[in-house]
Structures are given as C-alpha cells and as structure tokens.
Amino acid sequence: MSMLRLTTRDAGTGPVLEVFGDLDYASAPELRALVSTVALRPGQRLVLDLGGMEFCDSSGITALIAARSHALDARADIALAAVPPGTQRILRITGLDQIFALHPDVGSATRA
Image (tube, rainbow, N blue to C red; front, side):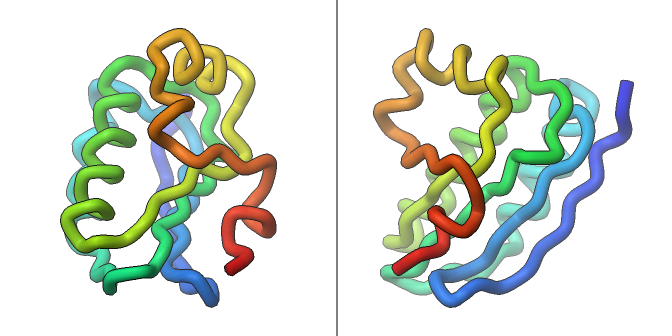
C-alpha cells in the first residue's frame, strides 16, 4: 500500500494535478476534496497526471468521474495523462475511455 500524494501546478492550458501512490477507498476522498478547490475558467483544461499512480480501485474511478463533473460544471475540459495500463483497461471495459481524453503524457495533454 502506497500513500497517496497529490501535487498541483499550472500549465498553459490550466491546472495539472499529479497523482502518486494508491487511489483507493481510503484516499479517493482526498483527491475529490482537492479537485473541488481547483478554480477552473471556461475553456481551460484540467489535467490529471496519473503517471505516478500505483493502484486505482472503484473509489478512485469514482473520484476521476467527480473530477470530470467539476470540470464540466466550470465549462472546462478534463484530460487524463500517463494512465497506467491496469487503469486504462478498466476505463476501456467500463466505456469511460469514451468520456475522458486519454493522453500518453502530460506534454500532449497540455498542448493547446
């Protein structure tokens, strides 16, 4: 079990949240709380960099969906970057790969 660590930074397209460790039942509320405080302007893109994420359960997937709702409520966009293969598989099986823009890395996710 790897403790969740979240960092934020700004990119030209909007905020980038970096996720490290396990995104699970115990830690997903932490991501949801942080996302709810992220100010987004219409037209910006919220990027969740999942390259450091080691594990994601259904609570983590729900937190990603909540982040999407936050972005849409602000009339902003959301993208997932560097999604680990296991999580990418879950997104594909559930059809969530159709509602999230998936990028191989943060660089491609933050290009205008």
